Image (cartoon, rainbow, N blue to C red; front, side):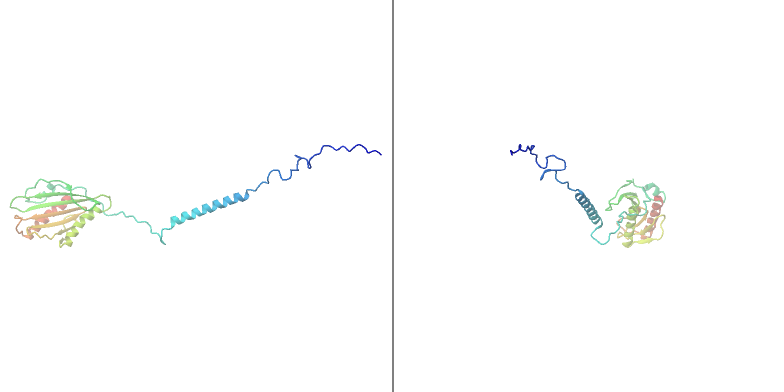
Length: 238
């Protein structure tokens, strides 16, 4: 028996067929997708830690003052009586209140005075009544204006001058016109007597000198004349 025709096989195809859906080639194809869930969670946790840590650090920096307690800030601003006066009376107004005064020398008016106090503006006004061979009188008024309104520096400075005179041995005058405090000061000169007083933010200084500046004056009479001038000055200040 003769053999039949050879068996005809079709074209050989790779197995499984390339590109056939559902059958990727072994070892090829797109890599498997990775989940981003872990990365997102990590970023969120990191942000929380950073923010939380920064907040704690800021809190520690703000709250830690190096001591167990913190004191409330206190104001260094001073307070006291307001300045009562801003100008001084003229010499003529003072002289009009005292009889039989020697002639008035030409007043210089208000001028700057020396002071170590940088909290005030300090000025001086002076009046002098003189003539040869007669008692003379000099009135000086020191005006202390507070640089900071309401600080009380003006009156405090005026008061200090009179308190110093008391400390140095002066004798208090119980009442003297409108003054707050007045004192007969202690002087080494036998030909003079002096009264100091303060009235608000003004300090007054009255000096009476006998007919002979190098001689000796009756202190009782001198103090009476000084008191007249001090009263007139206080009333003129107002």
